[in-house]
Length: 190
Image (cartoon, rainbow, N blue to C red):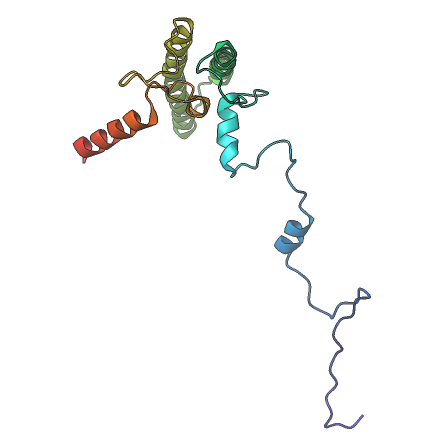
């Protein structure tokens, strides 16, 4: 080799050899080796994940059939199952919170630790209060199911729709009436 000639490294071939110092960053390596999410449940970011979480564990969306009457016995049973499962889940969460607060209640000597505990308990209690109101709405929906009023808009009386009720089982208004109500609220508040 003459001193004026530079040597170049050959491009990597398909035999697995790599040029030196060309490692992929750790983050890239992790993303390549990451296993995909199981196909049985939707990814967290998918639009179906919130829909299925409303239906409850193990409850499939209602299969709509051509010419089927609205709020027939099968549909009522479907929504009865959704509402009772949802209520059960909320009641279990309330019980867990009560036990957690009883078990974790300590009198910390440090004021910062006491303040942290108080703020955690306050947040949990606010969440449970919202859930208590939700349980009341679920009970109202279950009562409407028994009296054949469930699934119809309180304002205009038309059908709310199966898919809307599956997304929000405690809905009391059709999408049009709810949209109008939200527009009015927005105009009054702003």
